[in-house]
Length: 307
Image (cartoon, rainbow, N blue to C red):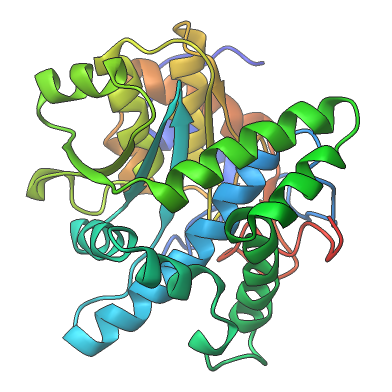
């Protein structure tokens, strides 16, 4: 990794290494170019696959709810298993409230996650993706005998990976979620002392629009949790979030996240502390910008129907 010389300002540390207008939601991409991620197996990390499936389904569910209420569309949903607890977060607090209400009841949870008729746009990328996710969630999360058969089918590393995914799936299926105010340090520390709970991460207006991966890192650092934390969601982490997670990992937290970042946003970079910006700048100078076949909006279409 290169050493960052001089200022960590955008103009010095980032601008020479990226291209694009940065306008609206376009963001900037690496000068190394864009790499499209080919289909791959998730046999080494079934939990991240599970979190991607659930987050993508919840995204479209929250989008439908937002449209009915005249609210802005959600941007991103991510999930994290740390210890024996699962945390779910979003960039916007309205989305967090929708998720909490949905997952509080088994019938609404099931409809949001596995009802294939729930989304009408089957010809769109989102429709195809969510339909495939629904089939896998049905057999691996809601069909208990099917789940047992799937877990037993794992070999080697995949066996342990499937067992971990089944644990998180069962927790999300059976446990009523609790709100966790990420600005309440005492509550955050208590959450990490808890066992087998599901937390919906809530934040105040000062956190609105902030990327959820950074919120998760705040939780890990505040809670002092350093053992393995697995993170996955609808989209791959942007380069800024990858920088933050890399920094937190360098501080002794065992963070497991996708290492193929998407684009970078100037506003998010400039909001980071100097030490975190150093980690982000190193990635900007060495990484490609990655995307799936479905585009930058999904960390999806990267596993097969059978996988």
